[in-house]
Image 1 (cartoon, rainbow, N blue to C red):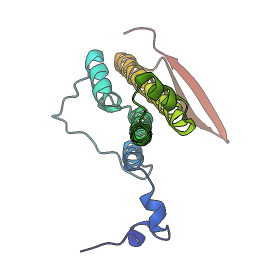
Image 2 (cartoon, one colour):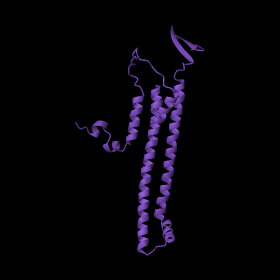
Image 3 (cartoon, helix red, strand yellow):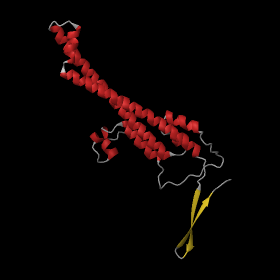
Image 4 (cartoon, rainbow, N blue to C red):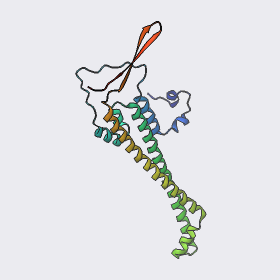
Length: 207
């Protein structure tokens, strides 16, 4: 059975859907799946099941290998979706910059070959004169400057991706350390009648 794009996305034009990067679609689906719906009923765990806390080092490695995995393994789904989305956007930016860099390199190489052929046709064989002519071509110079800018952008995206991976790993490591810590302060509110509510605080100071 074939389903058209208009049937899947309602009144959204198919061209608009096609322009959405696949990696961002995956990131959106991951975030939606990570956030529990308010209307869902809690499923009681099997009495025979034993919850084994994830070690901080394991959470760190998982977060570095796959953004969001370390947080998801300790039950922090919101942070998992947050870091996964950030890394997905960073990966998309890196891949897009790399593609644009390859395109400008191809254009610059083609322009340089055309200039060399023109110089050869004119009988210019001196290497210094050829390089001087290439450096003096405004179009080729603009392409080279744009290529340098694309390389800098690629390095920036790569540095940002590494930083986010380390940040995600460190956050997962700390969160795994704190996952067994009890809440220091518990608040209880009890109806006392006549429209009054008694509020009490319980502070745990030891075992």
